Image 1 (tube, helix red, strand yellow):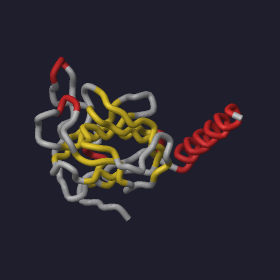
Image 2 (spheres, rainbow, N blue to C red):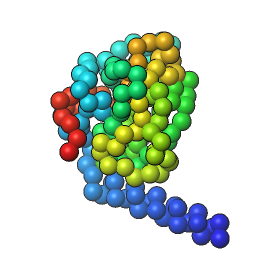
Image 3 (cartoon, rainbow, N blue to C red):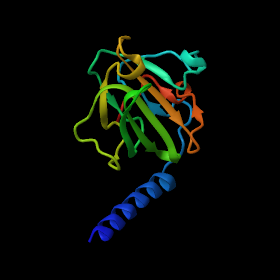
Image 4 (cartoon, one colour):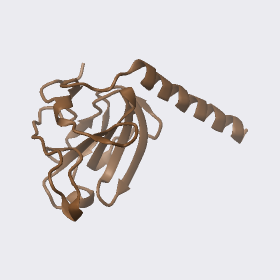
Length: 164
């Protein structure tokens, strides 16, 4: 029975990934809505960070607890906590691009691994977890290609675009 359930879960995941891959296209300039509605942000891509790292994303500052919406439809692949990102959610979106949302105060209650979500779905709330502890609350938003190569999200997000 366990093998059947595992096989069905795996089949469901593969079908979800295929749908995201075949139906979706990677984001283009100004094609993504702002994950934190009403909050503008600047291009902090590749700004120096501690330990000789470069910033692989943008920071969107907002009041703690402000909802964060997924910029793309996709499959929630990871929900977790790490030293750098704190509480985070990773969504595999259209065109097989990874969307990384970090420093969350908390994750939306209805979110779980492998959940298929539409663009605009609330995934969590702005915070300062991980290495952002003690800084003004913000969302770190990163985008990565399938092979985990970082992509600058700034030109892809239309800061004034809302969700339909």
